[in-house]
Length: 221
Ligand code: DX5
Ligand code: ZN
Image 1: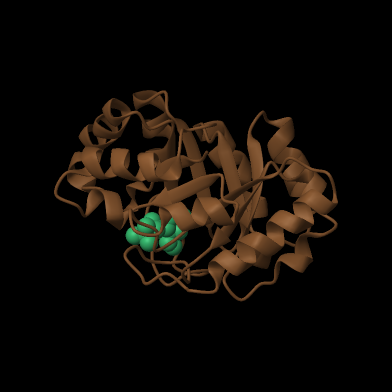
Image 2 (image 1 turned 135 degrees about the horizontal axis):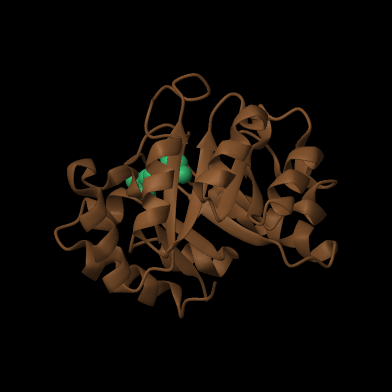
């Protein structure tokens, strides 16, 4: 049982509203929104005004993934813009406990993101404050990259860390996932699967979404 979250990074930006409608019609519940600043990652995407516009356009939950150097300064803007999930990189935050508290206080679901090189052990003390943990299975910055093969082992290690603390924290995975490996992701313990190029780069994005959702089992938010 897992939820597929289409990543609009690979959608047609000239027709973003229409692309979102397609995913609504296909039955998506969560939309993954990649915010990049050209500092923390070598790419620049979208920011607050687009999140605001998406929030006014759709009822889908907005899963905002901040790949920015200063999330502590910017979080409030994204929360006010309508982020339902707000995920911040462990590698970018000095006062993680304070920031996750702040996100929850503002009514959103706080999550910590780990780069491929960051071990899950760093989460031990902060897990109780997380609604979810997002594991990067590619180096952040671009859609369409190759899945890093050791990522499912990391998912399993995270699942046992969560279980050992008796918590209900959800595991999200991001990068290089498509119809061919989504089942393995879910079997290793993933709850939310992000997919960008696999969906929007396919001939029929609705069909690919449904295929992935089917391979992942029934959806659960
Ligand atoms: C990459 C982003 C991902 C991206 C995934 O830095 O965080 O969300 O959209 O793209 P795919 O699914 O194409 O690997
Ligand atoms: Zn992402």
